[in-house]
Length: 400
Image 1: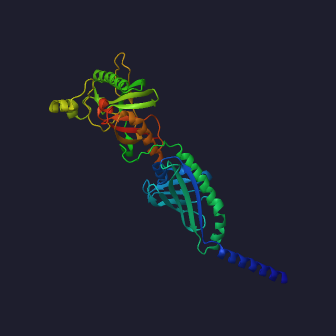
Image 2: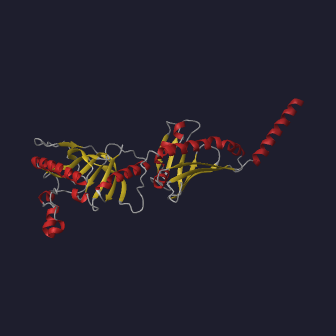
Image 3: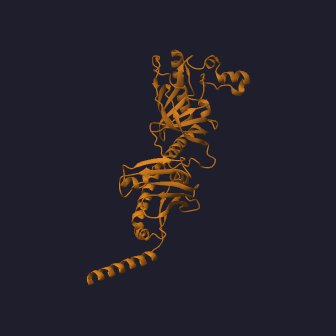
């Protein structure tokens, strides 16, 4: 009996000590970790301000590769939410939801998970850093805050939060930095940019006549002449097969080297009479304007002019067209499949398009898309204008 009483007294003392220690332990915890990247502020902010790339850097997916992830709410900014469900005991079910977003400065996220505590938030603070007056790098500081209140077990759990959550923060930031390094370092939202209207779009199947221009010297006149001569082959093929243009010509880029530019020229086509009859019967648009305004809109010497139904894509009419390629013509007929693509509008010189392509790819990656195949540009106002500041383009890059 005496031993039992001694045991109960000892047990009561231990409980009392635990209560006393629990009461003096912090009722909240704050953690902070940082990493630095040389990517543009726009790229860093847009990546964090959207949860679409969560799976590419957050350690949660390493511990639970089979976790079911679901995005909801807007694509980015306040209200964007990612929820997960997992059978892994250490992960369980939970969510991240953006509750505050200050462009170029910070993103605050509310966390709901199985860890002890409430009012759990993680915040990413972005600070320009680097040497000199121009700060070229960005410091990413991630903080984590949790409240335990009078939950003494939670306060004890807080003793280990630095090891559990803190280690995840370090790993996550390292993976985030590595992921950002794969994004082209082009600021697609820089002030004064002539690139605009970035979006994900659906492209229908199209009938194309294509010429592989090959590797052309990087000289404006040489490239222009190559485009025009190859468009002449396409024009002859169209005339031989009763085809009309179903949209503006486009350039598909293969490689832009220091000395040479490798590309294909493509022209969307359809059978004459298979679209809007009034377009088939109408005069060429540019020629008509030249008649009315004389020299104001007169095509330049050597400029190829086709009847174009619309600048919107014309869907391929089911079965592939029966196209007979004239002898010696380096033309190929292709019917494309429907695709998703990242798209942007651009105004300016054709020589600037390589930077635009990289900017579009950077935008796509920050939005959680992955590009594939070769980029291409629709030349909305023709070849000659493309070599001036008045060039108008729609730039596309197919998405996986």
